[in-house]
Amino acid sequence: MRCLAIDPGSRAWGWAYYDSSAQSIVYGRETFPAHWSFQLRLRRISELTTSLISRYRPELLVVEMQNHTRNVTTLRRLNEIVGVVMLAGEMHAVPVEEIRITEVRFVLIPKPFKRTKETMWQCLQDQCNGDISFLKQGTAKAPAFDASDAVGMAIFAASLKSTKPKEGALYDRLAHITLHYQPLTKRGKVG
Image: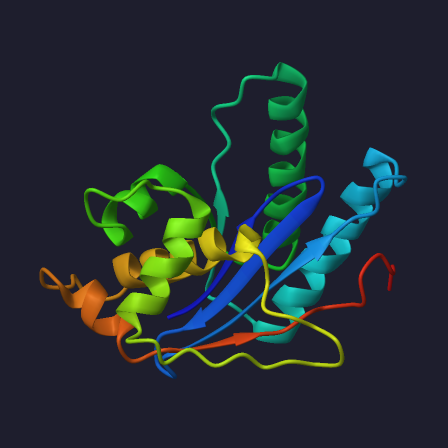
């Protein structure tokens, strides 16, 4: 199963591509300059999603379901971003599913830990027995936690779509993957 996961945001946007047959993950994050208009950010998100779909040819595109925030304007904008991502998937005939990050974190983060992006990243590293390597290009660094939810969503969704895993099979799969960070563009540059 080849799965592309998107963790949408108007300031930072995380993504991950998981290929279960190769047991590898490529992931990254994009940040958008504060001075960009929301419309320009939507256009860039559309371009990024299309680029990722063209590059990796996923069998499934998953995007984080946006259903809670304290600010109604933020929720509306996040849903507009999700719509752009879903449209890109539809235009490339890639099945698109929304996924609740709370469900992913519930499965991947054991009790009693807080279920946050930071804890997600730490649990992914622990489940991979610390065998995580980063592919660095230029001055790229390992991403902040914006990509951790996307990595978790990609593994979770691909595992659900594969044959019904036995209990613990998701964790067993995590022990055999290699993670690679791959930036799409230099920070703040379009194209």
